[in-house]
Image 1 (cartoon, rainbow, N blue to C red):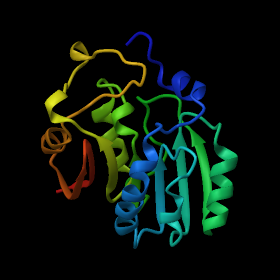
Image 2 (cartoon, one colour):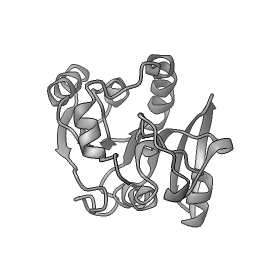
Image 3 (cartoon, rainbow, N blue to C red):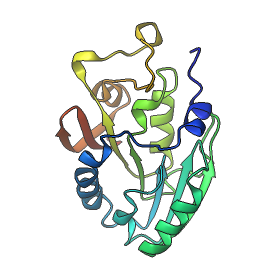
Image 4 (tube, rainbow, N blue to C red):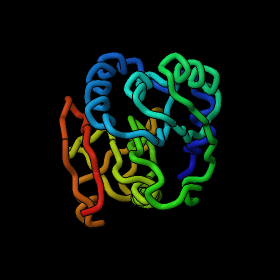
Length: 194
């Protein structure tokens, strides 16, 4: 995919969130709080600047994996404010294995991250997130009226958003989706092994 290098793009982008994110933050936070109640070890895949860290205040440890470290100080300050330990790791290769053993985390949280992954890595990445955790809590854009499942149907944009049929991906991998909620073109859900 020419023109879209995920690491380069997110390191140039000063604000990891869109201008309309505040419209969704309250909903994302409410959904996330319900899902992480008993989770002590959490992997936040793409934590941004920590806008949803309030949900982790009952956790012992949160690890963040991101393609940029430009918000690292803000993330650590916000984690400290909410009373949990936080460590950030950089990931510059979407095709590599995540360096944690199977089911190490109680949950992986990925908010507004999956739909920025290119079609050639989305399924691999979703498998890796589930491999290292008991469940994956996801919030992502999903517009089934405008979906595609491969690169040949990709139309470039300046936001580099991709829309997937998460139901189909989960069904093909024998994962179950539950606790799903919809908000406009957003899908909030958990997926885990059957």
